[in-house]
Length: 614
Image (cartoon, rainbow, N blue to C red; front, top):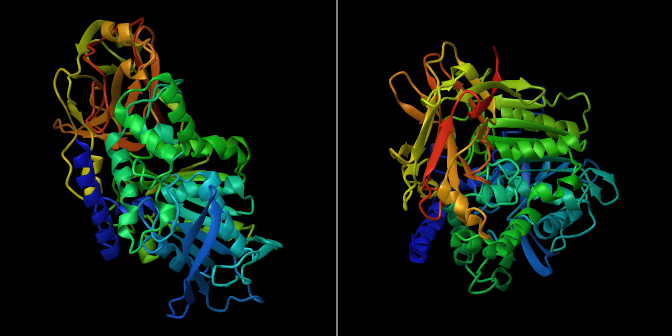
């Protein structure tokens, strides 16, 4: 795709987002502003919402804050519940939009309304570079976006006023200047919570949803264990779609704000963000540029600053999410838990890549309908805030881990719970005859091969089609460009909950000759994925998730962590592991690199699954 085509797609994406947000059109794929903004979604006695029209007032406010060395205007709305005043204060909820949204995008303002109706002071704002807030898009940098949000906490704490002189003396305080405040929001509005908590320890509760742990992994995933310092396969569709949405932001405003303009080469992002996108698009990853790319992507990501976050955190991540998969939340959860930060995690059904057509029937939160009390995720969120903001110590905030099961139709039973993430408990072996077997002694000796072509020959999803609202074609693989291993028909259902791991060894003389190049792009790239094969032969790529791998060394075995899933393989179905040469949503191999896989009883690949139940 040429730059001109990118721009045309970008303009269409921006316009589509604006129209859909204003009309709030329901879609089978989660609306962009909702999927990238707030997507909330707990069982106990909770304060019911007020249905009165005057349950709260809304006051538009502007704040001029210093962030990243610039003066930035923050556009916000203050929701004040009726009856809340200096003598009757209430805790506060702070929220902002997902990428491409604003304070009025239909999901962000729903945060203000929903929590004001339940007695919370709510302050929702357009993130820097979005809506009518000034300054550049800096990808939730703690020193910029976190610092700006911290100034809003100052307002809630009574130590600063809005630009028009408005003050807030009606928020519950734990100490002078220290308001009782929580944050909630999704995607871009999720990571900013962790960024804010890293620089401001006054926050009392966080609910980050469908967000990232490491942008380096999200934008150029390398699922080879131990290869975190090598960029993987560039996720070009998602990345360029968002990049164009970001670059088009100033064009959507009635007046041009100079603080939102960087340069002609990098219109609306901070320079390091543009350099990262340009490097990824170049398809060339020499060591110096790779180090720069990884350093920036990680500096603005939770992976680099979670050791400074001690705010109780409820993570909500989506199973249908090829942008920020379940592994992202799992990494954040494990890091926070290891350092002693109170943390729990929910794997809801939907994410950036799709969602239920009827959230209420699936037990999921739909903020626009305010179904917090009637959805599992909503009740969990309310309980989290009840415990940590209303300081009700006897409120049960639920189990450490919960996950949605789409094979359960009863909304009261769709979520299963556990105190620990399921362990890798089932091992299958790759046999030379293309079978996946449960005993190493059943492995047949043999070798098979595939080769890549100069154009992609496998399809998992089209992120750009989803962003624009176009239908996507089914996943596919072209004969001769992939290998697969399949189990016999299952004698009983198999429930996989978590991230499977595959240990593989491949032979590729061409890749062996180029893999020691100073350019990481010369290493072999492959894509691992799991299918569910029905008795009639129909193949379903589970959640359309794949694991790109830049093979560290083709002379040695390597381990691949696949994206986390929650999936039931029904009785009579078969599980299929595929490694493919390419995928059209990602950049792939540079040049033709044929691959052979040799299997034998003494030396073969294995697939380990996190299985629940018998």
